[in-house]
Image (cartoon, rainbow over all chains, first blue to last red; front, side, top):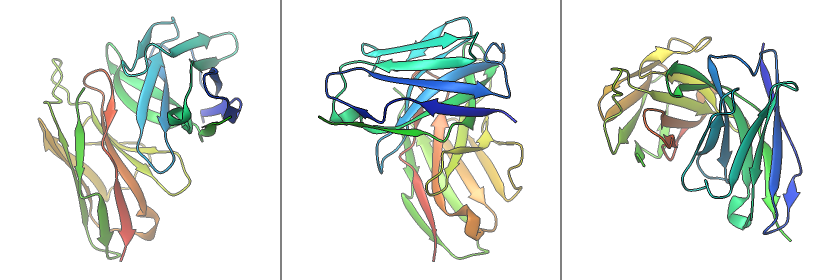
Length: 124
Length: 112
């Protein structure tokens, strides 16, 4: 059974860069059937898609965050990563990594596996 | 961006009774390939979201058959035929027809 596990600092200072890694187990990140996704949820609020990456490195980002986001993939480690620069308190959220199974190109599908999430707090 | 609007935002339900959650999109979710990339997620308290329904009406593996999805175009519904205690949580609709993917605000299902 596949699992996704987020890791990274739980506290980031304002204007610094948030960095998280998602480790995939029980499945290959190099699968042609999936995209790998970051989604966040501010405390007590709804869900926001941050961006998605294919094993080839092809990315899609939410335009609202695009100028600050970089998602990368390391197929040798079966991991993908998120960097969000110039963070503010508004970036405080639980960050989830998830798997999107592709129904049709490019990246049309559904989020069928989720990590447990990691809370990142932006505070000085 | 496609805006997803859910109603109601809160739904008190009696155990064993049905529950219905509506989701409306600001644009049609029918993709050029003919599919509708509308999914429903369940988030139990303190848990990550879990996929219930994908592509409008397909129940995901392991999801009880009391959950069903329907709709067309811009109007969608999640129905729980007989609510059980374990169904308490927040339900989200989400679309993957057009970038950026977007989510509804969530509907909190609670037991009366």
